[in-house]
Image (tube, rainbow, N blue to C red; front, side, top):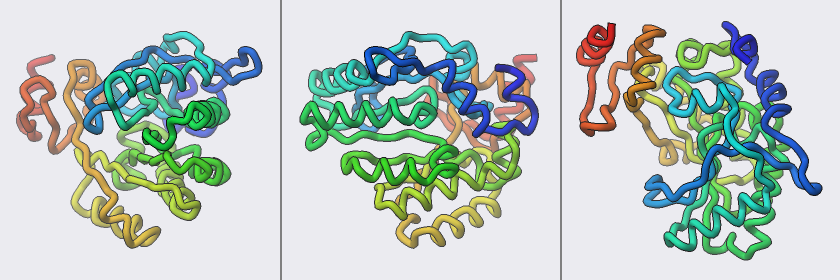
Length: 274
């Protein structure tokens, strides 16, 4: 897989390659690899399934190793839906989600998970947060149309950088694929799927951020109120990768000390690692 993530790689082609590794058929269902299930604190509490496999190689990805080595076991969508709803019920969570990798890589598995959540009668009391980089939804607008059939789905599109150049800097993928993330937002909005855009601001310039906001509001004037800002969290493995790639966030978060880390301090942390 290292060759698939070569300089200027095509994330759509990578998605097709990864899907063959992380998906299989079991008893007529499309099973996918997961490397865990847990109750988490995200969104005030959520039942989370950690999927294996992604079509991007973001420098700050916390689950990069899991996605590179394809760890985990295959689970049928019926089992996934059962696990997520049981965790949510036991912990009184409203939200269920898939995280770790890219959920849309094995789209039939994802749709079957949603079908089972609905069949279990839980779609009225639980909301499904679709955490996605948007690449495949931008590439295939039919995915957004299919997702619109599930009223309990909220798409949370995580935009990598604020421009083509920043997207390439973060992911190493061909610059033009940045625009598929914006196309994903449009496809989702056009199909009536509730959509939130998450911007990783740590690597964005003021100018590129301003231009991104303009592009998003051109898609939907209400989008400005549905934008969330994130800052890179310097977990040890993330710090190591950023320093190695000489990728410098102008602002970051120390997840242990719960403190803001600015560029000078980040440079000092990298020097201390040398």
